[in-house]
Length: 276
Image 1: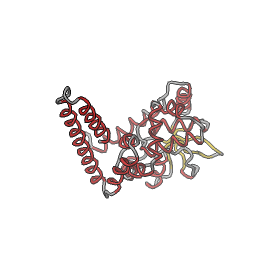
Image 2: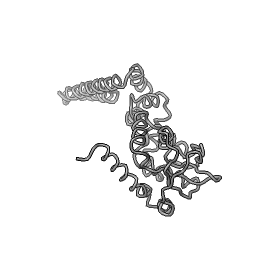
Image 3: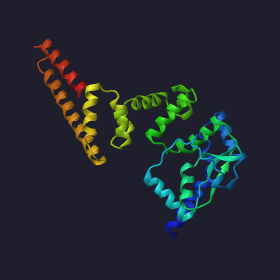
Image 4: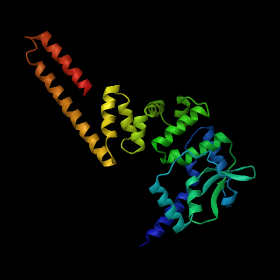
């Protein structure tokens, strides 16, 4: 039976061999160009760390502490298995993707970074890092929000163009921007007390209703407390909705005798459901 170390090594090698395939998320000309660049310059070389420019132009993803610890542990144990992506700039190498790999390689005491060298302008380089991060599902809410805003400000793209580029619908981009406008919601997501999907629901609410929800969660100290608070709020909401539904059922009785009165009660009950 293979050891855990052997299994990890096989998986890392498989990941490395699948490198080129990861850079074909698009079916348009840009995707074809990107894939062609990787295939033409796909040789993995060892680059001295001292020859890599300290530049984060193309870094679009943060790294959770625990995941970075796992990456560092893997590199210390097995060496770097997955190559970074670089391009040449001013006689040195500029990182396109693999910023955390480079950091871990340096921290592990290694002097060389395994990388694939590509020829790419600024726009294509950004698409490469998107392919290596966004399309593999590594992007957090904050990573994606910051990246969307960057595509707006630096690349002059509108929501429709961004949606097409990231292969999502326009409404998704709009929701990221709407949720991102509320600093209180963003803060809760950063603290892992709420999710992007919570934010999508909350932005539909009125200011007083939203304030009640956020005030409760802001008063929690841990993720567990926040989770329990959300469950409690959901349960309360269900109770209120059921009570309103019961009122509607009761109002239906005697419809023919007190038509106007019943209609008024139904309207009141519907308003209560809406509030709930």
